[in-house]
Image 1 (cartoon, rainbow, N blue to C red):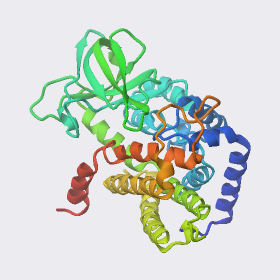
Image 2: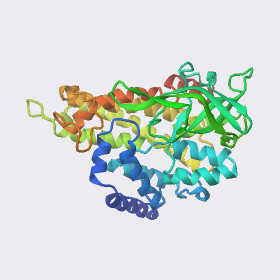
Image 3: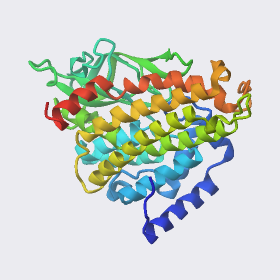
Image 4: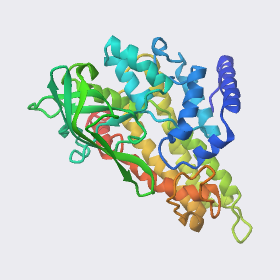
Length: 402
C-alpha cells in the first residue's frame, strides 16, 4: 500500500532514513536478523534503545509532556516502517508501551516523576507479571496475593510466561489484595523490585530452544505501598487499558510486509532443476500474494487505531482485531519461510545466540538457519497477549454485537 505523502512527511521520512543509516550498525542489523524471539535481547536492544533515547525518539506513543515525540499517527507509521525495512531491533514493550502509559494515566505525581524518566532512559528494565500457572486465559482467576502489612505489601504466589524476566530488574504485577464476590474485583496493580530476597526467576526453555520466558516465584517478597498504581481493586481496569495498548499500540504490518519482501528476494535466488526461480512459480506467487493482502488489510486497521490514539481516543476493541489478525499473519509468514528453504530449514540449532563471534555457522544460509526457530517461536503469537480464542469472543461481542 502506498501513501501520497505531504512534503513535510516526505522530509520526515528522509530524516528517519538518514538517522537509521548513521545510527544503525551493520552488526546490530545482522544480530537482529538472527534473533528468533519476539523482542531483541538486551545485548543488542539496549544499545539501540539508548540511541533512540538520545535522539528523543524513544517514546512515539507518549504525550510530549512526559517525553513523547509529538509525532502524528502517520509519522509514527513512517518511523516504524523505515525501521522494519532496515531490520532495526524490535525493542521490548513492557516498559515503554505497557507500563509507561499506565503510569502517566493512573499513577501518582511521585510515580510519574520517579519512574517515567527511568523507563525512557532504559535505566529500569521491566517485565510483566500477569499470567499464572492455574489461570490460563482466565486472568481474573489469578491467586497471587499482596497482603497489606503497615507501609508494605507482602507478596506470595507465582507468575508464568514472564518475558525477559531474567533480564529485568523490576516487575509490574496484577495481585489479589482482597477476596471478592466477582473475580475481577479485589485485584490491584503493584510494582516490585526483582532483585530482593523472596523472589526467584526460573527459566522456561521454549520449543525453539530459546530462553525468552520464565516463571517467577514470590515468597514473602516485600514492596512499599507507594508502589500501588491507582487504587486498591483498580487492577482489572488498569489491566484492560494496558492490554489494549499491548494489542493495538504497535504497527505489526510494516515488519510483516518487510519480512515478506525479504523472503521474496530469497526466493528469487533459489533455482529449481529446470532453471526456474522459486519466485517465478505460480505456487509461490499465489501464497505470497495472499499473505501480503492480509498484511495490507492489517496495516489499514493499525493506521486507524494509531489515528484514534493520537487524537486522545481509547484504542478500543479494534485492538483485539489487530492482535487476532497480526498473530495469524505472523505465523503464515514464518511458515512460508520454512516452505521456501525446505530441507535447508530442517537445521534446528539450539545454541543461542545465533549472532556474534561464537555463533554457530549456518549450514545453508542465515535465512535458512533462523527459519525453523522463528516458526516454532511464533506458535506462541496466538497465545500471548490474550489467546486468539479470547480475542474472537471480544470481537464477536463488542464489534459484531453477537
